[in-house]
Length: 249
Image 1 (tube, rainbow, N blue to C red):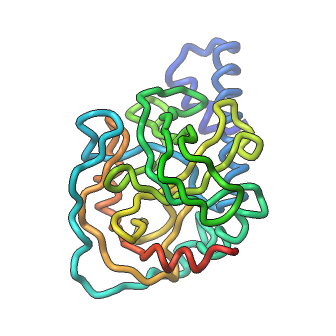
Image 2 (cartoon, rainbow, N blue to C red):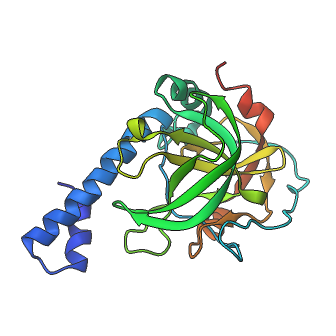
Image 3 (cartoon, one colour):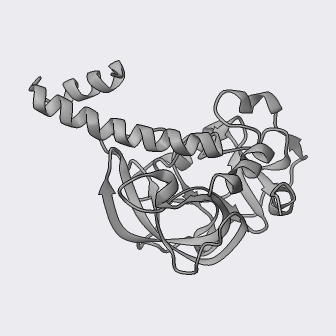
């Protein structure tokens, strides 16, 4: 039994044994599901989404600033050690584990569900599968996003213009959850994926990859502050061509 889970439950409920056990089982199921994806993508799985929220659900900002004209930087390869495998290894493992790597546009449907953590439903369009089983146009997936709930997790998803994203897509038979397919993703702006500059974020790490600092707007799930927190950490734009060259055929 995880003491942190127990403390969290007891802080929000009377110490009724049935209530405590029910809450712990829900969180343990969610935790086991995330650990399954960790083993595939070696990263942090599906959590809350940013600032610059859509004026209407699913509507991304009309324009996005280009990356700043700054000198290219290469992230420290050692940063991947604590949370993510290096991206080349994550990408190579995805296919063998039944996970797809996709470039797509995601639009929030407005539906949310709680399954240990808060999830937002997303419809995918303009889907391009880079590796792994093909993901169909119009597929519906869930992305974990703790929008100010009591179960708020670490940083979660952001989207680029028109909901552009690069993601690890795990069907239900892989993630073993009750919701269906889930996706862990980072935003795409132009021809670049936007990653955290200093470590792991949503199963992706920029470690060892060359890019330029990114300071433009991004879109997140309503009511969360992922964008603000990631701006403080720093964001880096990595060319999609660079990432695609790492994906196995």
